[in-house]
Length: 83
Image 1 (cartoon, rainbow, N blue to C red):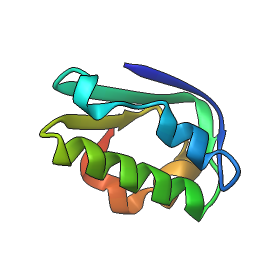
Image 2: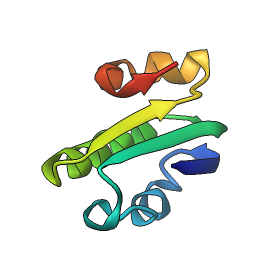
Image 3: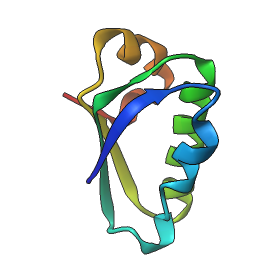
């Protein structure tokens, strides 16, 4: 499980992407957003790209503890959301 901290926005997407290594991660990965917020469309795009990387590696990824406004921003990532 990855426990994220701090805002995810255009200025942090590169560092966010560099946190993950799908090839070396377990089969099932959980991103815990309890300590962060998705602030803009760049953050949404970074998550979409990350989920695509995990899916390409044959892994499962889930997103959890997103605030209501984050859930609305991430609506397109719906299949990956967990309560």
